[in-house]
Length: 473
Ligand SMILES: Cc1cc2nc3c(=O)[nH]c(=O)nc-3n(C[C@H](O)[C@H](O)[C@H](O)COP(=O)(O)OP(=O)(O)OC[C@H]3O[C@@H](n4cnc5c(N)ncnc54)[C@H](O)[C@@H]3O)c2cc1C
Image 1: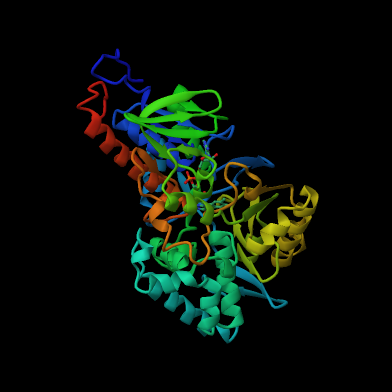
Image 2 (image 1 turned 90 degrees about the vertical axis):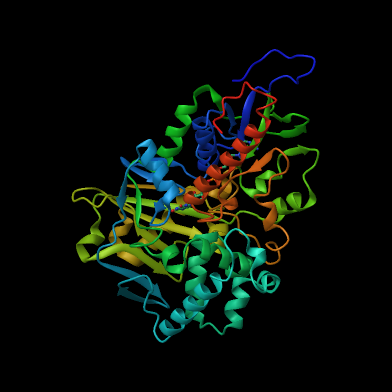
């Protein structure tokens, strides 16, 4: 902590250089990099645990990731951070054929795009068109896309209908959208969908397992990365400490929880966009910032894991990846270790319209419905789980849903600029503010690193007045 005696011609030194609000991957990364720059930090986390949208549990002796799980090529910043803190990775099991339950039929296939009859060609046409349009949306500045206002005025769903996408193509995109944004195609701005796809390097990069964003996961789980960063912070981290108020003062900011007020030269707010609205800013944020917090709500995505004595589907040349046009689980992965003798783990996603109903059910009913979905895809042995767990992100008070914000039509052009634009000494992080891999863990890390650099700029420019700062310029 910085400390120097106040004098008549100099303001008292702040308690720390930078306060970070939120100890998800983004806030923890920002704090970690700031300390590496030589800055002092205080990190406030509202929940009793760190990690935010990454969390872990043990079921029948097996580790599972309840939130962010997979990583893939091009996600360089999360991969570098994991290496830095010593969390290793393994490849997602993807050998063999995938299964699809579609219009009452049960089929096996290879690759990402399932055989949906004559519609296969149409799926290819829609994918090519989405990828081509996505490349026209500048990363980090969607409002600068050609026809941005028109693209923002419609939803992904209305564009699919206007493009005469076949019912099967529409349903497959809906499945991808429920997993990606936790909402239905009619609920998401088409401009946002295109921007998101471009940031992730195209639809294949976003949706594929081998060579795509589902290629690997972490041996100890993604939450281990957050825990290692948090452990290094020691007393600089306070959990169960929601930030309630941020006041901008002449020399910086005053950040208050119910129990404590800390002064700093800058604050990095690393919470999901909608949760910015729960902090009282004084003076009030510019109107576009306040409106953005209301218009960028979280999607709804829940997860279910079933653990088995062994991954019986692998014996039948099945990868564990499945798709279904009936819920509640509509997409599955084999989330178990690849080595022989390990237990089997099926991961199922429940998102969008299915999650809204699912999240209201009693635990036993959720387990029964998830196992029944797994059995529809992999046969009756899927009912014989030795362990089950699910996670409803909409029920997490300081996250509010998942996997990421899902702005509706009309919410991007006027408000996307407010996501990351600093307001004086108030800086913004969180995956939604990233200009690559927004919505992913990689985006969270990138945004935290960008905010740390911005904070270092503020500290450097004020260090002539406050020589006590240890920041390396
Ligand atoms: C079901 C699910 C599956 C996912 N799958 C993947 C995946 O496979 N791969 C991938 O890359 N990503 C995935 N993601 C997304 C990924 O988890 C997120 O992008 C990432 O973890 C977001 O990190 P963050 O730090 O930006 O935000 P968060 O993790 O939301 O962190 C924000 C933190 O701020 C805290 N907070 C909020 N308000 C306050 C306040 N007033 N004061 C103090 N603290 C506050 C919250 O408690 C939280 O800890 C998934 C997410 C979910 C939910």
